[in-house]
Length: 174
Image 1 (cartoon, rainbow, N blue to C red):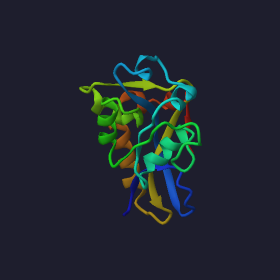
Image 2: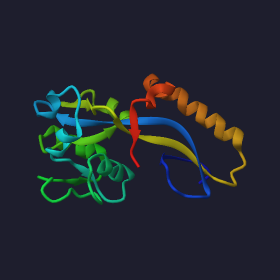
Image 3: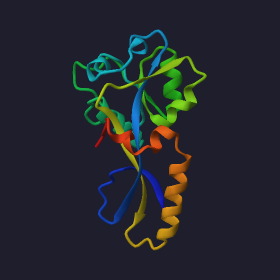
Image 4: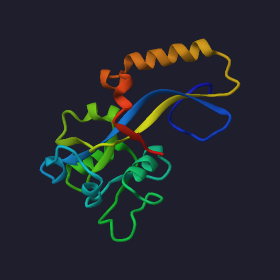
């Protein structure tokens, strides 16, 4: 691979990361649930809920685990009522709609849920987010290609992610 579009930071010394945008996370909750009735979700609100996670190996699982204060993808004793592991975000969202819990989705996944029965609820400030970058090996020589790809990706983003201030009220999940 010459170029990868990845959630960063990777912590790989020989990989250059060129940040493209900051993507906030949201809670996806079933209509009629306690979370769906909130204007914003706090950490305390989320700790009382069943959080549905992706299976081991998905980078989004690790990011959601950090958002939810999970240790190694598991809640601390006494915090969890139930956790289900699904192979796709789509599966988790369908389970949420059946009232089996809530999940955390990135901003770009919100649009796919417009016709569903669930509700997308923002986190209260500071909102958790992830940095998305183009990543190349330090020896990558085609800088003009990298710049053109970065411009194309930024131009195709929703306007709220294109604004430089989109990251001002978010806190990156590490």
